[in-house]
Length: 157
Image 1 (tube, one colour):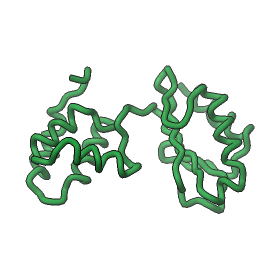
Image 2 (cartoon, one colour):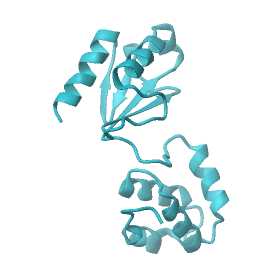
Image 3 (cartoon, one colour):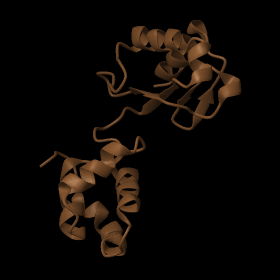
């Protein structure tokens, strides 16, 4: 059992959707909205409530990039690696983030403040290179601009 996971929080979701055919993605989305990720114990409970095998649920959860199986930091950095961003030095921005925060793609800082996820495309090609931090989009990034953004967020804590 994962600590601090109140499985009763998803009872309403399961009551509403568990018996509705084709609702697995909705259940997973709503579960992730509640916990910030998909806890293993919640996946087990979803399996029991829906009759869908845990392995099938995991297949769906790992196929779609929107789902997370581990907790993320307060600030989720999604760095675009699409073609426009790539040709405009997104790799340099990635190195800057790694150096500044001491984390790699898929990792979270020790203090739980930042998580980094490289994504295929954010759809903001005219702003390349670009990253999103939670709901905010930052474009035309340079190493200095990236460091300044990250430091401001850290100082705000």
